[in-house]
Structure formats: C-alpha cells, structure tokens
Length: 97
Image (tube, rainbow, N blue to C red; front, side, top):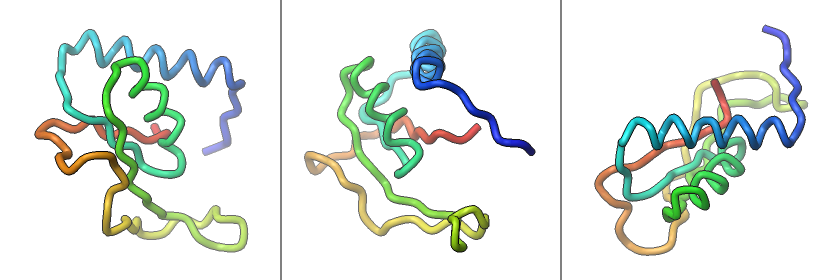
C-alpha cells in the first residue's frame, strides 16, 4: 500500500466528518480514549467538539531504525486521564483506517 498525504486543513475536515458520523449514530459515550501518538490530534479535536473528557493510552506497534517495521502491538500499563472514573462507554480513537 502506498502512502497517502493530505493537508492539515483536509485532515481536520476528515475529523469533523467523523464527528458528524458519530453524532448521527446517536451513540453516547462517557469519555474519549485516544491511542498515542497518532490518535492524539483526533482525540483532542473530538473531545472539543463533543465536550468530553479525554484519556490517553500509549501504544506502539512499529520498530526499526525509522520506526516503520510493523510488529506486535504493545500497550502502556496505565491510562493518562483526569479523574478516577473512566466511565462505562468509551469512544476509542486512532489515526489508522
């Protein structure tokens, strides 16, 4: 698969399009959890649009000198979040399709 390059404005529009789809689904969630690093921007924008708290979970599946060799995914042991309660319904976001 070849790389796909898009501009920042187009990237933001795609996140806003995603927000519309989430809203139209009527699915309710208590918190947004984004996978770092790629999902940080997506999570930030969605948390502002939906006025929801954001939590961050570090994950890594790439290694090698340039960080382009895909391997098994590894998750951090803990979430970074404000508050003690994650909530019952979580929207998990990342930048991969």
